[in-house]
Length: 381
Image (cartoon, rainbow, N blue to C red; front, top):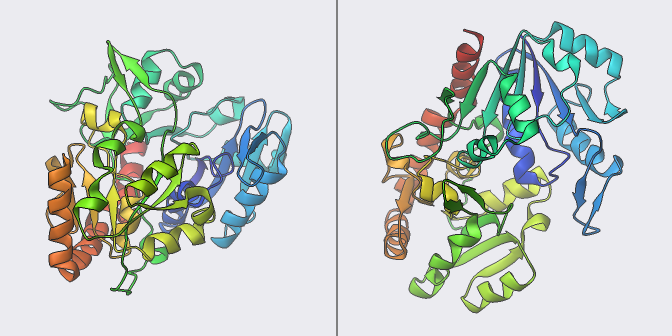
C-alpha cells in the first residue's frame, strides 16, 4: 500500500518523541509498504527552540531536526513539512500526487490543525490516540482541530487498553475506540548487553499541559504523582537518575531527595542520545500522568517498550495494566510507595531473569510487525 503517516517530529524536537513516529515509519516500511511522512503545522509553525529557550516560527530549526532524524532511517526524500503556504521537503505538487494515490492516511497523536482538501484523497484515514483520557476530554470540550480530524477518520485507535471497559472512566463519547499497543521496531532496538548498569532511570516532563476537567473531576500530569514517590531514593540503596524537563525550581527539590537530575532535553535531544540513555540504564522507574492513573486508562508508555526491547525491566505505576499484560517478570507495577520499594528489590534480586523477560515481552506484545499488521487489517476492513 501507499501510506501517508502524519506525525510531529519537527514540532516536538526531542529524541524520545521522534522515536515514537520513527517506530511506525520503520515498521510500516518493513512490511513492504511505501511510506511518506507528513507534518502539518497549520497556518504557522510554532516550535520551542531548546538551545535558545524560546519559541520560533522559522522553519529551519524544526525541518533541520526532522531531516536529520529521517535521513538516518532512509526517509530522506519521502517527507514534507507544511506551514501555511510554506513547505520544506518534497515538492508540493509531488505530494499532491502522493495523496491522490494513497491507500491510507494515518494521523498519530496530534490532530491535523489545517485539514487541506488533499487529505481527504487517501482511500482510508485512521486516527491513533496516544494520550488516552485527555484526548477524549478535549473532544468533549469541543476542540475544533481534534474534532475535525476525528470526524474525518474511518477508524479510531487508542493505546488506552481499558478505554470502554468497566472501571475505566474515560468518556468514549459514543465512538468505537479500537485497542492497540504502541509498536517498537526491534531491529533498531537490540538488547543492550551491559549487565552492570547502575541507575533506575526516568525520562519525563514535569508538566506537559494544563489540567483538564470532566464532570467535575480534574485530571493532571506527572507533577501530581511524582511527589508521592520522591522519597524513594532514601528508602533503598538503588541509585535513581531522572532526565527532567521542568521549571527551574524542581531539580533542586529532587536533588535534596537524593535524585541524580540531568537536563531532559539535552541528554535525549537526538534519537541516538535518547537510545543511549535508555540502554545505559539498569531499569525504568515509570511515573504516569495523574489522569492516566485516576481514569485507569490502561496506558503503557512508548518509552517503556524501548526499555523492554533493550532488555531492561520496567517498574511502572499501575494504570490498569494487569488486565492485558503479564505482570511480575520484566514488567512490574506499583500503586504506592511501599509497592515501588518492593518492586525495586524484586528486580535486583533476580536481575537477569527480568532482563530476559523484558525482551520476550517486547517481542510478544510490541513488535511492530505484529502491532502494525493488526491495525492495518482493522483499518482497511
